[in-house]
Amino acid sequence: MSRSIEVLLAPPWPADLVRGAHVAVVDVLRASTTIAVALANGAAGVIPVTEPGDAIALGHRLGRDRVLFCGERNAERIDGFDLDNSPASFTPEAIAGKTLIMTTTNGTRALRAVATAASVRTAALVNRTALADALAHEEGAIVIVCAGDADGFALEDAIGAGALVDTLLTLIGEVELKDGARAAALLYRSVAGRLAEAVASSDHAQSLSRKGFARDVTRCAALDTVNVVPTLRDGILVVTPAASPV
Ligand code: MLT
Image (cartoon, helix red, strand yellow):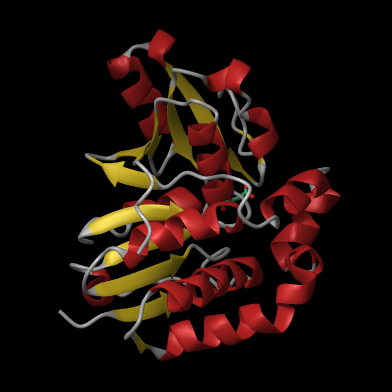
């Protein structure tokens, strides 16, 4: 089967492009970074849901002592929730062995929107190479979905998608690169030498910094600090074993 890579740079994400594809959802600030950190630090799994009420209802069905309610609205912890959406909150002490039920403004919404994909993973700058290794083993179409911000384009997600495309191109021989993927790769290469600065210049990074989360922005802009591939299995993001070299 011929291989292709596309990047959907902003919502809405056309269902016909996602159907049957191997999808990576990118929300660099901060959901996909936080999910990678949480799974690396021993969370049993992360269940993405759309609304806080969905999280509470599901948590009580699964058993309150087994779960933690996590996520944000306007970047802050939701009333009654255990944790916010800051990767710094997801320490091994706080989360090991727990199932995390998470709702965020854009990231978990994007995850819920790609249900017809052949496979769904989450990608961030922090696990870029681990993700690229896993995707490089798949046949067929790879579609990278940028979660975006408030129904539009988010610079940091396009940079994250471009970083993934750039590494995929070093791992996959023959591949058809679609325009969205080409644009993301060009963007990433233009800022690769000053990645932290480029991520920090984005609208959402500036808003996070104003709210006291500047350290999160720096952490989310770091490449390859986490070696996990969060993969959706029956509605739960879990860690899959690292792929063997291509
Ligand atoms: C989102 O899903 O919109 C983000 O992760 C928001 C945030 O920075 O917490």
